[in-house]
Length: 81
Image (cartoon, rainbow, N blue to C red; front, side):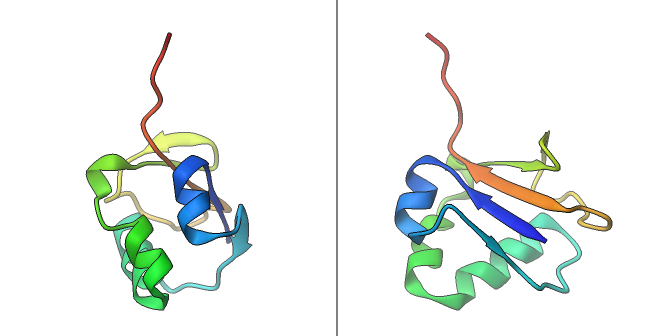
């Protein structure tokens, strides 16, 4: 699946997107796999309350399943102005 990173998440990880082979059942499982890769991923996912996730461009929760999902995007909460 494609994993896309926006804003400071992208800056901490160092890439805007990547193709990830995973056996993760949920977004939380995927986050655990990614955080275990390297320190830069661990830093990006250290505080999940500071992150939002979208599955196939639909806002979702970290306990959401990944079956059939093609794209997971991580980004900080948006603010309006």
